[in-house]
Image 1 (cartoon, rainbow, N blue to C red):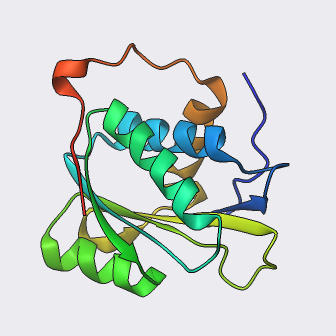
Image 2: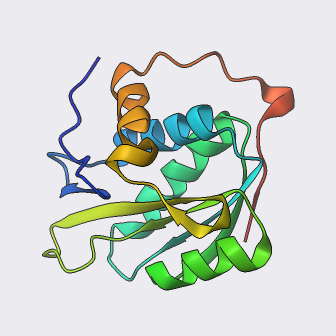
Length: 148
């Protein structure tokens, strides 16, 4: 059990290395997949130098939970909302720290219908699962796919 301080009221953001890293990104992906049980989600990231590495670990966690990941590449948050709704997938995650300094990064999570996930609509549940890290063993036969 670890305490994750990167979870805020409406999103995830934190100082790189201290509050957010690749291991935490994997935990968040796995927790999102275990909690929401989506079949397919879209995944994107902003231009920050750390976004790609965080996005890849997030994708691995999602895949380990059985989620198919459609990586739309470099994107803004609005594009994740659009792609989630337009493609009819079960959710989306944008790796971004928005207006925060360059030594930060974060994530915006949405569910089906491009509905945002915040503290009172599932983000706290994802946090609890990510903090506990008590995930079922990965079922390789049911592992999710990854495509760009």
